[in-house]
Length: 175
Image (cartoon, rainbow, N blue to C red; front, side, top):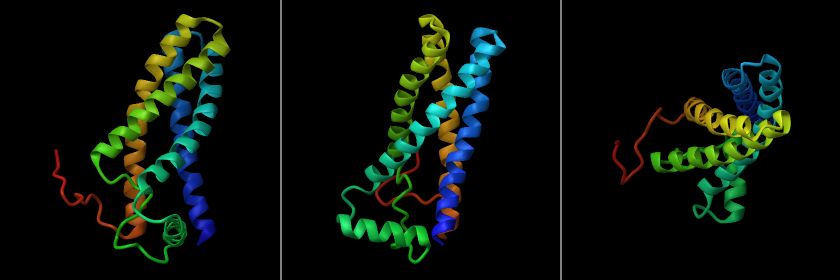
């Protein structure tokens, strides 16, 4: 069960990395029209972003759990949830609970992505105009793809946890 949970996490990170690689190369090529620069930015930037994504995802899992349980309860239920031993009243603490949370998570992802993209693009091209263009356009495109990626994985995780596909949390309405 632990191996399955670890495999699921690595599949999520790997699918994010693959999606990011393709989009980064295409955006860098559209901006530079130089396939060598596009490949360089497109190969380095997703690696840096994938590492940043793993950290971002873990931070958001903690934010989403904060205040719901004591530290000991949180740790034990996280382990039990990942092992499939219980579903804590059909609530997976690692999943966004509202559109507001998903929007905040996507926004913070966009900010993080901008900083990493500009840094990598500047390191590769040594041209601040290209770096700002890549850093502005590529994260916008990636943020759209990130939101779709996160929604797909949210549904996969909910299905694996035996939770209905798209419940509306108490006190919230669909907008």
